[in-house]
Image (cartoon, rainbow, N blue to C red; front, side, top):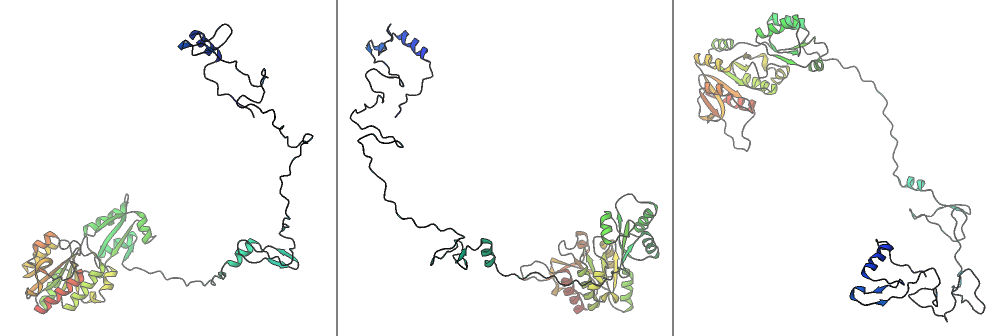
Amino acid sequence: MAYYSKAPSRKTRDQKRRQAEQRGGFNDEGANYAGARKGKATASPTKRTYGKPASGEPRYGTRKNVDDNAPAKRVYGKPAPEGETRPNTRKPAEAAPAKRTYGKSASTGDLRYTAKTGQSNRVRGDHITPKPYAEQKREQRPVVKPFVPAPYRPQPPMEESINENLLSGRNPIREALKSGRDIEKLMVARGELSGSAREIVAMAKERRVPVQEVDRARLDAITPHHQGMLAFASAYQYHSVDEMLALAESKGEKPFLVMLDGITDPHNLGAVIRTAECAGAHGVIVQERRAVGLTPTAVKASAGAIDHIMVSRVVNLAATLDMLKKQGVWAYAADTEGEDYTAVDFSGGAVIVIGAEGDGISRLVLEKCDKTVALPIRGKIGSLNASVAAGILLYAVLRSR
């Protein structure tokens, strides 16, 4: 066994010697005096250098003395000294079981099992081979029928639906404006307009047709042949308010009209037109801007009632109410803060004003009305559909008349 000294100090040997000389710890013979600071001079024994023979001392170390009577160390791999017998410490060898080699024949009665499935392997004659793992996983998979695509059947060509109310191209739009046909709105591609396009836009503004500038991609999505502008014509011809008043006078009845403020849903417009015709109204007044007109959807929702009732489109609803008041027509606004409709007398000339579901009747139009009527609400929802509210009030007017 080898013994090792402690790790060397940071200071060198010469530095230690000089420090010892300054303290008087070394004499001329080189003896080290321990405790020189306290004045004690006790010579320390000579240091033993490991790896070299020491006088009168064994070379086996300094921590423990070597016993001379101890037997010599036995060196493995070499013969023992004379007169020494080495005991046999090994256990008697037991008969180890014969190792099985997979892929070769096994002894009779020996069954082999796979580690993952727990099933016995296949036996081919006297030769047993393990079942492949891929084959085992394949057997565990559910049987899935292969996908067989249906035979291809060509679809018949779809007939392109022609919208008669859509005017594409500059010449059709110009001729429609010259003939006096009602145009709902004119869509123009954003950008600089050429000479003919400027002329058409000027004609539309002169006839108070709404002009809307949009991206060219939006026009392309509607139709590829637009030449930078599209126009939506009205499905039916509009009438004037004077024609409605003349119709009521010819029948010998008081004027009975419906005014819609801010209705943008074509289905609501069609439903109101249908109810107004059934209740015997003389006409329906709609707003020119920020409201829906006689679009194909509104006409379809009216279920044919548009052919039997007049629809007028005006620029200013408040001015129209002032004109009707001069003709002896009373304006009744549908509002949640108004009077119960069952207590109101609708006899005489009447115009029922219906606002949008979200915003209701505008402030200026509401101020122009003579009375505000309300429908009782018993549920948790605070308002009715515009067409439903119009239907209730229209039949209330019919009952009073």
